[in-house]
Image 1 (spheres, one colour):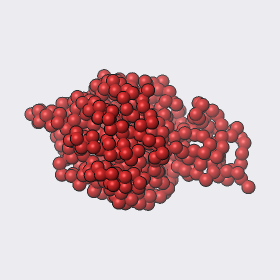
Image 2: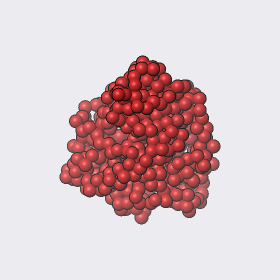
Image 3: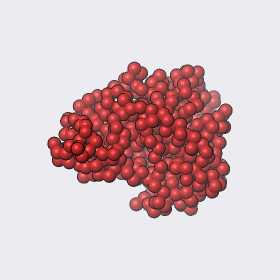
Image 4: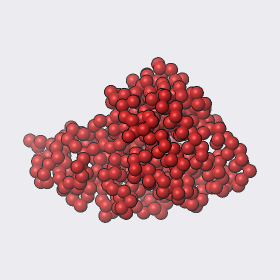
Length: 467
C-alpha cells in the first residue's frame, strides 16, 4: 500500500533552512515527510516542477460580515477569492450584524463559516462589556483574538459596533487589561476620535468630492497619537497588543520609540505598500480606506519598517462593499464607505516585490504566514516541516497575475478600482488546505472544506518583549 495520500514532487520548497528541491509527502492532512526527489509512494502526486512550494498565507485581518449584507459577499464567495489568492487561513473580524461580542455569537459565526468556508478560518471577538465573564467566555469559545476601535461607531451602525468601539481612553485601558487576562492578542484600529472630530469638522468646508479632503480629515497625526497612547497604556496593562493597518511614517517612528516597552506587534497592508494618495485620486471613492492611503514618503517608511522588523505582518484588511454603496457617495469622500478588496492582491503583490528584489522570499513569507502563526498561537501552521498542517501553495514566478474586474473571484470585483490594470510578477497555481487542493487554476474546493482554528493559549501575554 502507498505510504502517503499525496506527494508534491520536484518543486523548490521553502523550508526553515531555505529553498530546497525536494518532495513533500502528505498524509491525514499533515506534512508527513520531506523526501529526496523521486522517492516515496503515494495515492496521488502533484508535479511541482518549475514552481515554488510555499506555506499557505495566513491573513490575520479579513472582513466578510456574512450572513448579513450578501450583496457585499458571502463566506463562500470570499473564501473562494481567498483560495484563488493563496490564502489558506483567514481571521474574520467581528464587525457583523449584530456585532460578534459574545460567546454565543462566536459559536453562531463558527457554525456559519464551517458550513460555507473553502479555507480555514479563525473568528475575532469584540470584548463587549469588558467583564471577565464575557471576555473569558469568548476566549473559551476559541476566539483567535479580540478587536477594538478607538473611534466612534459609524452613524447608523451601532449594532455592528456595540462592544467593539471604545473612543474613551478609560474604556481602552479596561479593554487592554480584560484581554490581557485572557492571554490572547487584542488588535486595535488606532485613530484618535477627538482629533478626527476636529479635522473632519474643518474638512466639511472643502470639496467633498476631492480625495484630498479625506486625507485632510484623517491625517497621520490621528493614527500616531492613538498608537502612542495605546503603547503607553500597555506598559501597565501588559496585553498582547497588535496595531492594525499602520499607514504612516509618523506611526512608524512611534513604534520604534516604544520598542521593548511591552509585548506589541504591528501590521500594514498592500494598499499602503504599493499604492499612494495619487492612486486614490484616480480611483475616487472606490479607493477610500480608513485609515487613508497616504504619500510616497509614508510608503517608503513602511518598507523600511518591514526591513528592520518594526512591522512584522502584512495582511489584506479585505473589506468588500457593493458598487452601489460606493457609487452612492461618489461625490462625498467623508460619507463614502471605507474599504477595498485585497484577497487576490496580497500574495501576488508581495511575490512581485520578491521578483523585483525589494524583499527576500523567506522574509515575505514570514510577513504573510509564519509570523502570524507564532503571534496568534497556531503552532501547526505557517511552515513546511514534518508534523505541520498541509496548508501550502504552489506559485510560478515566471507567471503573471493581472488584476481586472473579469478575473477576480470576490464579490467586490466591481469596486477594486485601486488595482485595475495592475500586473504582478508571479502567479498562484495551486492552493492546498489540509492536504486537499482547493484551487488549481480555478476554485475546486467545496463549501465546508475549511476548518475552524483556535489559538494555543498556553503562552502568556507577557512572555515576549520586543528586543
